[in-house]
Image (cartoon, rainbow, N blue to C red; front, side, top):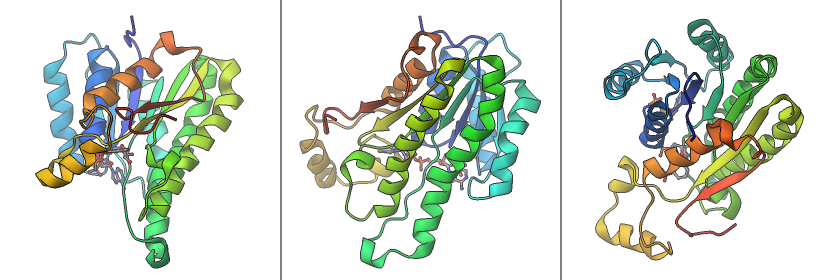
Length: 252
Ligand code: NAP
């Protein structure tokens, strides 16, 4: 069950904390990956790690460098994936940044950067994937949002707007393409153990854990498992949904 054999998957932000766990989960299930990010050296090292870790029948995972803040590069990403791998069966819009500030102090640039990378780039990649997926009568789109897109969070007007925007955009697209065998869903992580959260001191981590009924942060692999399910053929009847993976912190 949940085999991704024969599927090509594009993961943005693939060398990051959660992106790398998603890439591992998809590769473990047999998908061939196009790993994307802005840091070519990090991507190459991660590509080698994946190729060394999983036995596979395809010609190996590849990396495609792309700065999601650059509109031209974003428009070139899906064509590059099609040139290299021949299809885009799974698109995971995972890359994301934060530029936190209180609303009254937020600079235009902080707003623009977060909207451009977290929301607009995902729109462009979904738009570019639509045609090849419709032609193939198959596609899986998974957008990584956040619990704060639903709950809000002080200091993150830009980030919460982008994540809530992704949710609405996903639902609209899901309705447009449902009859063509394409699904579009979101996975909304709560607090996940990554380099960023590991840098918090014990007191800060304990304060976070106290807000989570499960009493711990999530693992990247737990996000990866949710994405692998939504990317599978077996999830064909799930669309426009958000799968919250947050240890019960917000039951939405
Ligand atoms: P991360 O470790 O900082 O990784 C972010 C990734 O985004 C990096 O791989 C980075 O790749 C890529 N990226 C950033 N700017 C980019 C740009 N201009 N062009 C292309 N790629 C860019 O973050 P993470 O914690 O794994 O977060 C992954 C996703 O989960 C994000 O959407 C985030 O909002 C969401 N999320 C995270 C948490 C959490 O607790 N960590 C909670 C809820 C939601 P390069 O370095 O190659 O540019």
